[in-house]
Length: 162
Image (cartoon, helix red, strand yellow):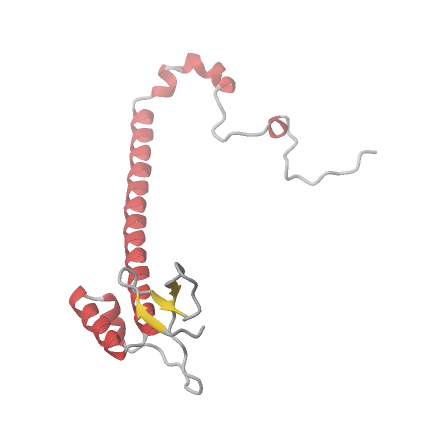
């Protein structure tokens, strides 16, 4: 899109504000996302480790990289550097949450195993053995549909009736 005026969005470094010069009174400025434009004829190479470390490292290193991109006045590079940092922070947070949930899951499994062992060691099934006949009336561990309870599973292939 050709524009007469463009500047980096003050609150979101992944967008720019622009005016085309064809706006009617009360229209504009427009806010558009921007991306780094590939240079034709160049073979892309992987990011050097120093660049990658500045993207994901300390805030002071990232700010130096961001300021260098600002000095280039290339809004696409500024936007993609900012997006990379934002997405990396989200990924890091999600991985931490996943690790916490995995640890909690393992803890609950371990506690269940310990409680099962304690119940077995206490001979609990024999102490309440008179309840064995009620075993069929217990709620199903996995909720089944009505067809599944009667032995006709929903995903089973149907055969033609003779």
